[in-house]
Image (cartoon, rainbow, N blue to C red; front, side, top):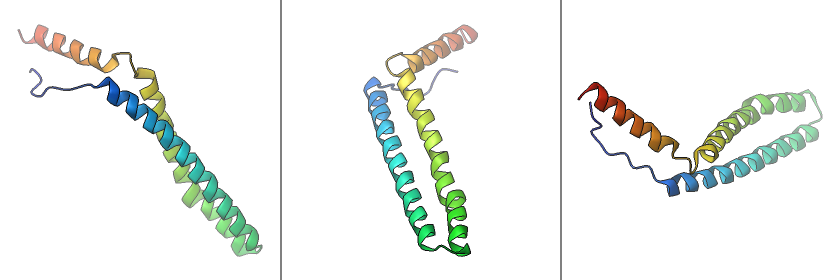
Length: 105
């Protein structure tokens, strides 16, 4: 079955996306550090068992999801950097068309 829609692979878009992912990674790290500092300040201000509970919950509830998000951002960013300018995706679609034509003459 031939492709029913043309797929446009824009190298400029890959470059832009890579740059924007790098910027997003930087902003996410700053957010994580800012939130961590705020919660450290809060738990220090509440030098009680309640303050310790806030500190423990902040790490699991707020900071861990940001760290998980950061892992995803870093993976996407490194993938975009790796494939940028390599024609990787273009070659995948070319090989698909070749395979499709050889199977369905």
